[in-house]
Length: 137
Ligand SMILES: [Zn+2]
Image (cartoon, rainbow, N blue to C red; front, side, top):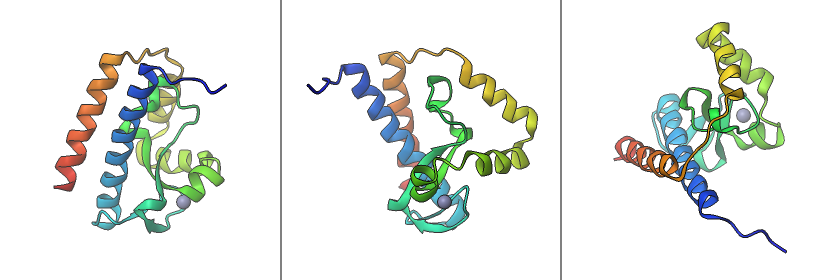
């Protein structure tokens, strides 16, 4: 039998959808100056936006890092899905940009137990929908 989605799952999915749309738009603009193409964070190839995910530097999709803008970037489907996230390359790039202390802080952040309440998820959804609109208007 299929598991019925509860309300929290639905709110989390909506929050992710808006967050992901913002990240992909942000990085498309930052890397190509358009909303149609984005340069992948790990392989560096420029791809159409429909082949771009919002990929995390650290795996696991834990609550403490799931909605962290600083560790999530436009990443092509080939790297994010087929390539398993390309975490080693991703880590190297981010340490070059931000330093090892920063990276280790994010590893610690992942292990923190964070509860995403319905209220928090609604706020995250609204925030990123707003940020997406600002960027794409
Ligand atoms: Zn890639």
